[in-house]
Image (cartoon, rainbow, N blue to C red):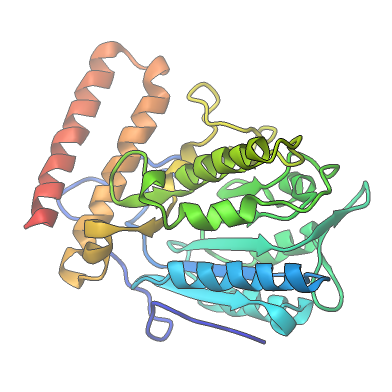
Length: 325
């Protein structure tokens, strides 16, 4: 098994302190402590042909590098190590150390299949089904989870994998889109391209990465003058059908926007500085609060919305000033 751990020493959990501010109501989970560690597992499954094998390994290795960070634990399975047994062992390992306050992100790269009844990820040796993957994810205590399934037919896995506290992104809208996808390439690009950081907060959220990869995928098919054979979707409300865009009316995208995948610039430097890590966590909490208010605006009075938004923006400015010192 190829098991790579980056960005963390041992398995200790670094809990960022949240000071001077009452815990904010956050999305599905209600009030929760500051974000702690993130466990990333990337699986590059069976390619079947040399060009696919190389492509999948390369994408996994690149993602492995990009996800390095002081609060990250990164595990990567590719090549001969991308077997069902290795995947099960690694998820059991993560289940043994991840805490409720941590995040868990599973990225699936490779080929997938759907027989009309069940989605399976193609691995070295026996494949693994979406149902089995969901069961493994359920054993991980992290209350915030994300599965990014970039394979063909991945749309068939969404309903099985999605649940409260777990968002799912799929490269295809259904199990019937069975051509090899390009979404994975642009997903990895999104985590490195500053233009993906639409709100300019030096961090790329899962929603920003999804929007970037979706737009780049569509542009690829247009440039090739080909009919698009993949249409990425996500489900992050645990009570709706997969969608292709965020919506303030349904709340779709709210959870994805709260999940920071990578940090850049000053935010990356702050994450590496123990003295500023608490401030960074507070900043992210405030940004999530602002996003939540914007989703809830229609259900609030104009006065209440303006008051809460102003308070959050003032606090955010103060935190940013401390971070900039």
